[in-house]
Image (cartoon, rainbow, N blue to C red; front, side, top):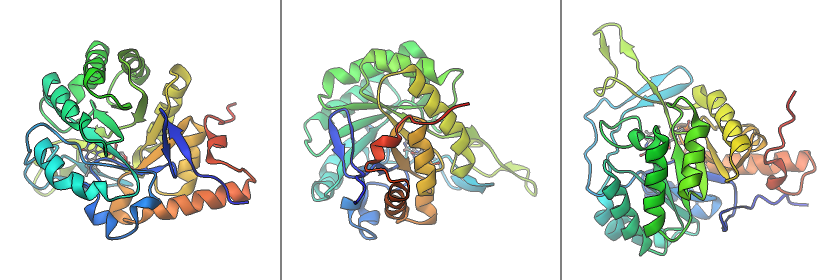
Length: 305
Ligand SMILES: Cc1cc2nc3c(=O)[nH]c(=O)nc-3n(C[C@H](O)[C@H](O)[C@H](O)COP(=O)(O)O)c2cc1C
């Protein structure tokens, strides 16, 4: 018996629970040269904003113990070029497409999402209300429950397909923010974005990033992400996409046991661009060994003490 990797979130069906994470594979073109996109559950794009953004000057990434720091500053082509230059490529790919949207004002989020509503290839939007690397916007929207609810509700009015709220770990209570997003009409959560961190060069006494601080990602954040996925799973009723340091099939199993329906792979793509394919094969093997017929049987089944 071949185990079934299919999962569904808010009525959208994914061939496997393994997606790419925003910002770690651009708009998919480079990855498609390495493996067929049909092997992915979904491709999640780099955050798209209303206007093109240059981002921060280099250096904007630095390696840390078991992870990395980045302060890219949401560099992207902007929604107009995204639609004219990137959508034609995405139209041809046999995978689900989730477009991550960011903004510095509520009106910008609404404008971008309303333009994307006309593009059928966009299966879902993931709202980045959690970016720690920009001076205005991003995290401001996702660290205040009232603002979170308002932002989600405003976007729901202009985008007719499912909306995922991507939550920040840099808050006092992630479950309060999750509940606010649910109240605003979100259809699912992505948990988590990067943790604020810094790193200092002891020769120059300067931070290793020009932005002075950045977002910590990779295996270093996995235990934090697992605890947050489980906390949101216990307090809310929406499906969760787990993110944070996933590098192996066993990592995916941990996230699914804690309550995730699907997962995203980010920093691991910098180590092995074909990591999502290797991880999906490993997950199938794990299910076979455990005599499970479907990945869904793992969701929320952690046996707590
Ligand atoms: C270089 C880099 C750029 C990123 N850019 C974005 C982005 O544009 N939008 C976003 O929502 N998250 C962005 N992220 C966060 C990832 O999507 C993900 O939430 C985070 O890296 C944790 O997953 P990981 O530990 O598997 O990398 C970025 C992460 C990295 C490493």
